Length: 269
Length: 269
Image (cartoon, rainbow over all chains, first blue to last red; front, side, top):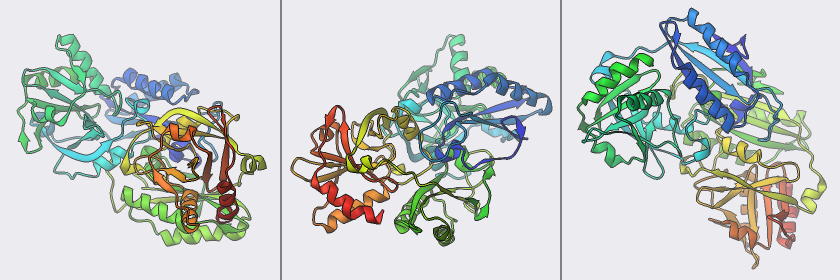
């Protein structure tokens, strides 16, 4: 199923600014057992991005309704939502009154080997760096060449790749957020105020840990913190929580807190 | 006129990776008096971008032929050429064997007031910063949100906006490159190895100055260099060379070398 501005269509005009400049935002929302998971959080991040880019004329309640319509039709699916600033001729300047465009599509929910969740995954260290840009950090805009370049570095031997910024800070996986369990059992995740995408799953984990009385520390991390970790895990809305079993020739155990989070947070994802 | 992969069409599939991730490159080529200007340089930069992104299966000679076909039909026009990595379902990973997509469109060549070229333009100082990312610097990829944000900062009172990177280096205008004439008549333009787009007009100016025996110095510049300049000018393929008459409340004269370059380089643009 693909709809453009609410109408069935699988094409869009070549004049769309999403194509020309990556001028827009997107979300990947999961439907499990006919239920959209964490729709409010996804739409809140979408709105954060629209605000950052000053894309003003989206009827978010209409988009929300269209998303909900997909629940009855899809037992399990991925819903991809793209909002662009709409059409333009040439030039970076835009007309504020121009209607934006929204594209909604459903995709098959991938099924991963159970071992990823149970035994953990292998994490590659990418050479590609993320640029530091506070104005574009945190939300999910359409300028994603860094992720494309990083993802191209590793093969199926690895399930994910870790990416640092140009200041040698660990930021995230190419498609996931990363958490560190320290030797003294603290949970730490990189600060994303200058680079990276703040995932909805990450936000659920942070909230859940807060409720558990074991708050996640959000702060700058470096590779040393990864290598010295007691355990590592990755999160996103589709994969939920994957422990890391191997990274940089080091084998990691799976600390109890990762199992606790899998048991408790996975339900909401 | 719009063609997608050589066929008349004004739409493309919503699954195009140019839309999803800005996964592609583009060029803006001018036709004047039925002649494509600097096509070789434009296609060389395009190829540099394709190589940087590892987009491998474009038949560049075919695209070149299609561009040439536009010369007889258009006395004056802008040709916009977009190359994307083609279609994908979800996910950053790509299949190398997948065909890329190319989109060719013609647009009216804008006519600017003669005063811009003769008396100069007003240059705004943008707050938006460019991220530092050597891997994506120099070529014209489709991740252009920084330019969109910078361009949105100024109104028609200004003809262009100057943008710095996060290290306080002057990089370029939102749609042009910038040159400084120093008090002792040297010509300097920012180094673009970490940020910015190396324009075809910039390259023509650098070559011409070399031939004149007055080579352009390509090096890091800061705002102080702008304020202390004897003169400033902007270049791109469409505007050619615009002197700056006003920047940061300072009024600039137009040094003779700018007139010389306008007289000599403009013909090739």
